[in-house]
Image 1 (cartoon, rainbow over the protein chains, first blue to last red):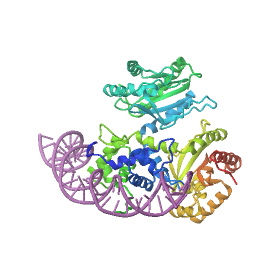
Image 2: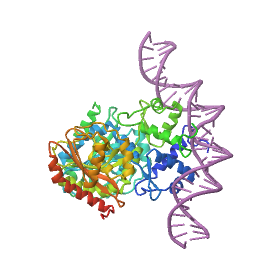
Image 3: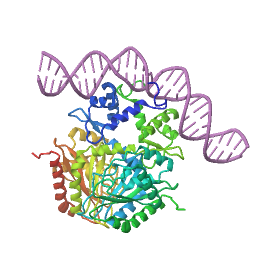
Length: 264
Length: 264
DNA sequence: ACGGGTGTTCCGAATACTGGAACGGATCGG
DNA sequence: CCGATCCGTTCCAGTATTCGGAACACCCGT
């Protein structure tokens, strides 16, 4: 096991982060033995990582059970990540305006391999409205291929990268209209790229419609995408595209412009 | 340098996390040399950590500048942290209701040593209202001693722990009414504990008023606090306490009850 | 009292880590 | 055009750091 990953690699760091990553949702409290079993390390080794993480504030030990939970220090990391995006800062006020003007929920997401990751979210201020939730919040992940945000982001990938990505995607059915054929998806992405607008009509889940537009950076790449999400009982597809897409696209262009993008 | 921290400590993990932590707000793009200088490591050693973090998706290399930025993987960590709190899930709907009822911004925070960390935030839906922002969002930190949330959390600390914490706090002036004497703060905390309500009248910043109440867990400790924040031009102090504190405290009690707290 | 679970500590062995040196590229100013 | 100087990256031998088995103290249900 001399150098499987190349010599420029820190085993300890990888293992320590593996410990940290074991604390996903649904497993908030973990013990040393349990963690060791998960990762495949002895209890003593695991304990050293855990102790280190605890000393640094990334983990906290529960005084009763002696098990560990994530510490507040971990929040810092996550939010440095979000805030290090000038993107988000620039976009936030535009998104709020868009949400207020339309009365619908607005989201912004980036692409991480096959997933999209929500980085900003403005819920509709319209009280009493049927909420589309799915337990979505900043940081949530969804598969790219069946969301309007994801399709925009995929569409603007450089050709080779897009091909590689598409090859990895597993096109499982998620909603009534999920695209399950690779050729159909490829064609759809071409269309999205041409129009600068992606539409998802119940591709992710029943009752869920959305349209999305790209945020373009200085070099013309899509660094993020924004969408408008509505419940199908509230807005028809025609209405969504005809009435709301201009506003959405205008907002996207404004944000792009603020980020230094110049249309040629 | 044999064992400064005790033998149960992983140097590599600490250093790797130090690399990650260097990416705070305002420094989104860092190079290997720069990082090495910050932490006090050679470029080669730093590079190994950086390469490891990049391979795992915690960092991304900018193709142009060859510098590194935080990767989406870091978001996962932060959000596992937040979501691993049943606290937050239980509280969210109550906070939304409270915000809708009152029309003001509602926050929830926990204590991390001398700071409070926001873990949930419901902005006032009342359009056009003067926004109190200070660039606050989930994950933001503020000093505990000059915020209503912080004073509640400090007030409910076990006596010894409270004493230790107070000893560490630096009481620098932040707003017109910041408490800058340790004895005054101690007396104030006693009052807060007795009343179950903390008030901050321009202690953190000019024009900022808030009241906060504790969320109590099964063992009677304050696991979090919630507040109502208003602009001083909008609501008088009397109004805030007389009209809004009952609603705030009721909401706090409801959340506490949901978490298993039983008043005796 | 027992067996099996836990978190924790200790230790010698060994391996994964360290940092100086060197390479290749980019960017600068002369 | 050319050194000078920064950068990220790779290589390497020496050793500090990490490894995991064993043992301890503790808690539990039997």
